[in-house]
Image 1 (cartoon, helix red, strand yellow):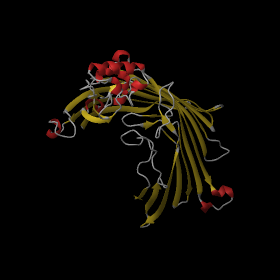
Image 2 (cartoon, rainbow, N blue to C red):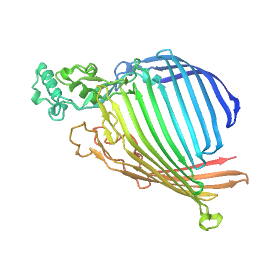
Image 3 (tube, rainbow, N blue to C red):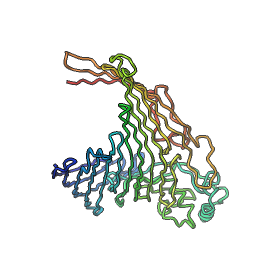
Image 4 (cartoon, rainbow, N blue to C red):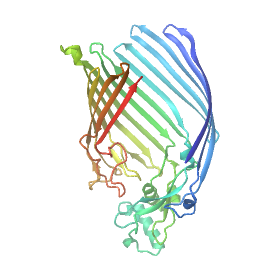
Amino acid sequence: MNVGQHYWYGKVTGPIVQLPAGPFSFAIGGELRHESGKYAPDSVITSGDGDFDQAPTAGSFNVKEGYLEFKVPVLKDMFLAKDLSVDGAARYSDYSNFGSATTWNVSVAYAPTRDIRFRFNTGIGFRAPSITDLYAGEYEAANTVNDPCDVNVGLRRSNANAAANCNRVLSTAGLTPANFVQQQTQLYTYVGGNPRLQPETSRQLDLGTIITPRWIPDLSMTVDYYRIKIANHITAPDAQTILNSCYSSSGLSSSQCLLVGPRGGGQLSTVSAVNANSGFVNTDGLDFGLNYNLKLSRLGLPNWAGRLEFSNLDTLLLNYTEQLPDGEIRQDAGAIISTTTPQAFTRFKSTSSIAYVQPKWSFQWTVRYIGPSSNYVSPGQPADTSYGGSVGAIVYHDIVGSYALKVAGKHTVTLVAGIDNMFDRDPPFYYDGSTNSLTNSYDYLGRYYYFKAGIRF
């Protein structure tokens, strides 16, 4: 898809007045944007003679925006107030196709002493659908699905509404419901842009602290809590989710049934899974960080011995709640979500590294840990114990080294070589009938060697 943007903007920045704790600074500005997109497939595609059918699409919209930002230093170098400042911002946006919205953000940073700093941030956000979200050409894909009415693998086996709906639909088609088996696992699914999309809106909250104790030089520790709530979440619906939502509703009353094509001879024919606003996403979690640089001279070694650098970043996902198109609320945290492209919402991830650094060279070893996750099951249902229904923890090891040398007496050339996934760990197996693997977090290249060089003039 060809995407274009014309952009005009202006801004004024600078301090307004000098306060006892520092200058009161501000910025004010405005923007005008015109965004457009166009997709023109060749004649083979538009005639239906290619691998899939796709029609040409085009669209555009205009945006007018104005914003204001400020920073106010409140206290500085006082008792129990080494530093206190407030930052704020507000933006007004007017879209030709969505209407207007006002967003804002406020941040507070407070350091009672030089050893500890607290930070707080809250605000509301707004994300308009992109040109691709809106106008990407609709096309046919062949997604792998289980027919809810299949007597062997369908939803009818565990859902009373699905069983009743399948009995009625199949009997109307002149088939025997008790013997029905889908003939093909791949279903024509229409995917692509949707010009009727509405913007996402969000609320966020961040709380954190930074500890840098002066009695342990070069040590810093951070703890942060985040919470994000997104409404009108834009997503590409999954064909299986649409089918299950439709057939599990009483009398096929779900609005998702409007996206399911007629059954030809009793078999499923098509599903429309273009981009859609599908409820909300609520997530929160904790981030932990630690960095420490140890000069070996502190241990009694000579200055030329260099230093060790330690770092660690841990992420703990507490909650990831998602509302599905049919209104069902699903807890994704710790689960594998079997959509068209399966994803693992692992609760815990960690990256740790140790480096030995000399003035001219360095060597670093990094360990990446990804925790376990299990196939999602609805509340009240037994856990999925099938092969590939869960994945265990996995650990990757990476190494990298660098060397700097002088060239012609004044230029510095830095050589870097490394190996990612040093022990060639395979990604975890997950049976989804398509890729047999998960689409996020994991390493799919295997052992990867690289070398690069840079020069500073």
